[in-house]
Length: 120
Image (tube, rainbow, N blue to C red; front, side, top):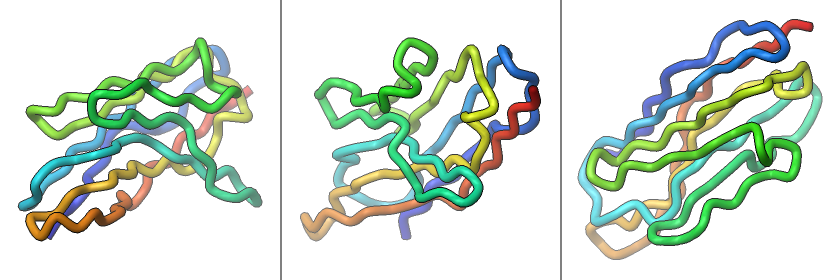
């Protein structure tokens, strides 16, 4: 069974930095897309950044220039370095991956989420 396990998150002051990490485990053929979404209180879940295998990273306009996504295709991990954080970055951050199973069927997986709180 495929699992996405997140780490990082926590409380940080505005202007500070945090790093989130996510590791995929289980049996699968490959990870097609891997990235992060977030959900602020009272808002819908939104894409933060995602990287397709061999492709360019897609960032939300609100995080461009501040967040950096990195992916390790050997370790099946993805990390999100978040700099210059502000209160609008507060929310639960979810790791997401589109994974090609051994059956050659693509499945979408979510982590349990990790809370990021930015205090002003």
